[in-house]
Length: 93
Image (cartoon, rainbow, N blue to C red; front, side):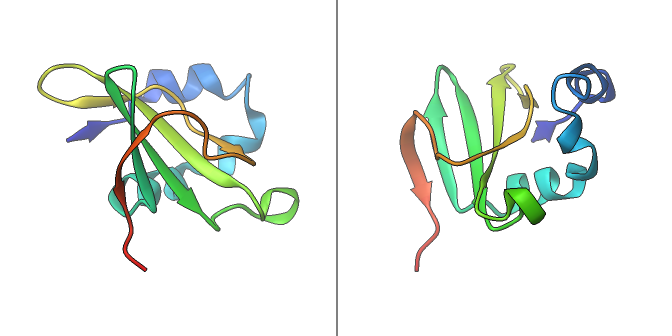
């Protein structure tokens, strides 16, 4: 189970105001990622093709923390790179 707390979401909006309209896309990335990466004890979910306008060629990354019985979303953001982490799952072509 992956949890996104409202407080985390609201705390990150001032830092990433462009993400205000991407909550549904972040949820979709968790449900149906293109890649899953193992990174520092959490899972990073990555999805291509969900960005709009200036971000249309970006990946949406959703890094999480492992809280023992669940994963908790740390943040989510658009980026031009998949980023670091060991690929643990990749969508079959």
